[in-house]
Image 1 (tube, rainbow, N blue to C red):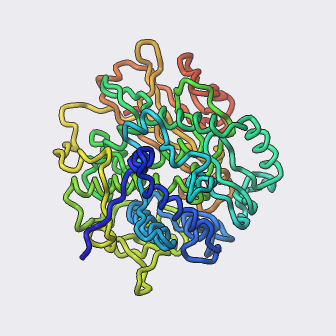
Image 2: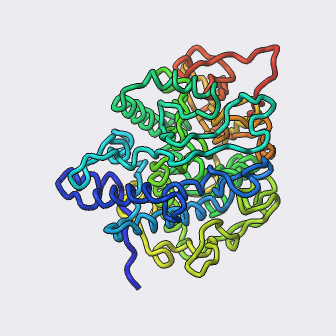
Image 3: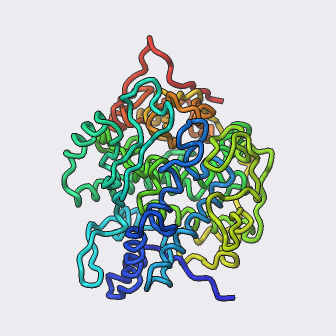
Amino acid sequence: MNPPRKRRSISDIQADYDRGETAELETLMRAWKGIKELPISDSNSFFKLGGFHGEPFRGPGAKTNAWWGGYCQHGTVLFPTWHRVYLHKLEKALQSIPGCETVMLPFWDECSEDSKTKGIPRALTDEKFMLDGVLIDNPLRSFVLPTAIVDNVAEDSGTDPNSPNYSKPAGYETVRYPLSGLVGTEADRATTQAHNAKFPNYAKNVSILDDNIMAWLKLPVVTGGVTRGLVIKKFSDCMDAPTYTLFSNTTSATAWNNANKDQPVVPLESPHNYMHLAVGGFDIPNYDASPITGANGDMGENDTAGLDPIFYFHHCFIDYAFWTWQRRHNATQALTIDSDDPGASYAGNQPPAGANPGDQLSMLTPLVPFQKSDGAYFDSRDCVDIEGQLGYTYGPGSLDHFANAPLATLAVGDTPTTQILVSHIDRTKISGSFIVAVYAEVDGEHRLIGAEPVLSRWNVTGCANCQTKLRVSSSFHVPTASLGDANIKVAIHTRKGVLGDKAPAMVSAGQLRATDSAGEVPFKVEIR
């Protein structure tokens, strides 16, 4: 058997290029250019592969909102394995391009010093690239739709026929923060055109995006008297999740955390969600800049995220983190799913294309639509050992030290923990994805002590496939001693402003407004 081939950090490949060792990055660019130019009917075309995640919808979900029309797994125990096989298929497509047989999919090392100090690697954002003596559009920065995507889901817009939807015309080019990509209706197009006209300079937009990424990674979060970077800490904490089931998804971890307030866990899906929103169009709470209202990039929406090439470099890092957790927990040969866990069925989750409401999930569940050479669907058993089964491994990365580090003890023992539970958040009243943020008054200022991103569609008012999660909750666990008599404030940061408490020290967090005393309370807060 051949030794596994390495997926390297895209920053390391860029550094080689800058030193004159250009072959690896040039081959990567050639491969990506190639799959984007294939006919849309070709199984290796980027349009075909990119569309497996969300739109264009298929199956019952193409017309009825009782199903999710994409294949992607979110909020279930299949989240890591489904995306692992997805990347494997994309990598094989890249290798199908003549002259690119040796290309490997690199990862964006999101916890590296480069990311913390520079933002997104240049190879993913440069506007142009010199390939074979010709200056071309960088194939990693965006994707132009070769054909229209039409959102035909019944009642997708609720009772308002003019409310936004996810239709995209042929020629639409994916966008990232600070731009908006909502173009489904005439009203959307007018609003988006006016918004994007404020940001005509591509280089400046990349700078704004990089600043937002760096801020998200390093955002100061105060817990137990220690200040840590928000997303960096989330990736670190998920390495201590004690079981695959709890590590794999937010549904399982949320249920556990609500029942075990002194033993909180962080799932891999949590920091994954943050980075989607950071690239797709969200300022961070308390980021010392004016939030850009109206930013709505494709990475921030499950419907279109898979059509932005950066998706695959982001998810390659998620897979690298998954493999690091496996090595740390001696789980490189087998994974176990708790069949009684809420994340192990569609009873409380949205069934994707190819599945049904109430289906039980296991290591044998087909990872539709990905097929092996014999025509059978991959299942999670086929991708546990990336080196022995899929033929790849990872080069050096920022999480390597976790692989052999001692495991943390799950229980906090003699350190009492206070749980702040934010529940009854009504998604029907929030357009698009949003962030739940909790603040505590420390030394006269409200400082962020926790935040949780929620990926959502722009409009779910009439969306039956969202009904099981129209009321969502988030829980935060803080050492009790660090809170003291702190005054807790909660805000929901949305793309149209912020719902919740207004504190004088929080003005930099965005368009904060106090809850209308005569209106409906947007969420419930319990401190226990």
